[in-house]
Length: 609
Image (tube, rainbow, N blue to C red):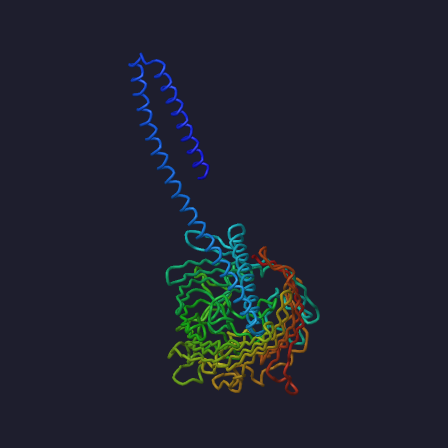
């Protein structure tokens, strides 16, 4: 601004000097040339115009100077305001520093500790958020790059199963694959007891497929599972519906938050589960033996079930399931019938027997998880039926004539019932203790040993057998090792009578487990029968009916690898089995024969991821 003022003053001086020079020049010319009056007047007029122009310029210069002075004043005011503002800021900073120092002096050590802990918590939360983000990113990567399921038209399809290479060594031959026929353990005199057996098998290899679809408030599920442990001449409906290729489970399900409806072939509702009553959470023994363990109650059979969930703490369920009657009887007359072998074209096994059932089995179950363990109680109601022919044993039956006939035939029904319970508790997050029990009449087929449900009275009516089944389990689980120990027993009562209508001997015992049955031949080996080297001799005079079957097992699984590429594991198992019979006569007294089996299993499995 000052430079502008100086320039203006210099310009003004130059104009004045120029005017003075011009004025002097004009005056000199006028004195010396008085005769030239016209020229002088012209110069004067020009000078007058120049003076007016200079006056205008001076006015403009004055206005500019006034504007410059105003701007200088404004600049000075702004400088003063800036100085005051800086002073205020400095004072505020000093007061703030003083306040902070005073506050720091007034804070107690406990408050500082609280602040430090809060800072540590914030850091921990930040770390957790970072880890969660990493896991989410990894899960997204795995789902996109290495999917565990197949997505097809809104349905998630998950394949599963395992491939197995397994073996069994028995010190007494049974002629069986890796599944054990517990109620067929040899009596002491059997020729098979003199030789051992070793079998290797891959037939327990399993394939499965889970299909899941979701609506707004409904989840729909379908599940298929199969293995290869079936035989064309022994497939039946008794417990596992073992038809070739063996369908273990084939069912469909619709579930909401509270209700679940399931239909198809599946594990029976009375089979223990690990979570509520959820399908596919069955608490199965960890054995290699696919017949599982003596004392374990189960069935895989067609049915329809309904389950009500109460806040994931309590469940109630009911099911209708396929029934079947298994029986055992000795010396009975042919005065009854309740089924037949499969017929051609009927898709049943022509070499197996099937009962003609009046109604399905009813099973009711309650499960609770109060926060420490899983507990279940259940009840089974079944209806057995046979057709009785009272005139099959003439002439001692009145009004029957002298020859057998179907005169007076009628249907007889018996109600079977059983109750049971399961409990499983986890200690130290890796130690599981489980117990199971089932008792009732007509419950034999629900046990692993396959004991009979019923025998026959002399008059041809069904006589239900009371039985019980019990299993205790201890399991230890780590990341790489699963150790298990099981002890179980199944028992069935004896029930027999004399047949007063037997024309040959009215004191003939009939039924199951009579002490008058002859067991004298249970200890004597016989020569082979026909079969060209593939038939040991059958025992003669060995009417020993099973009283109980007892088994103890110990084994472990080593998980070599368990990850997104699947699970690789192997393990051994040892089992001791004792089949005990009811006491019978041996000619000089009474004895109760029993058979013993020692078994050693191995398994090498690869599970699909």
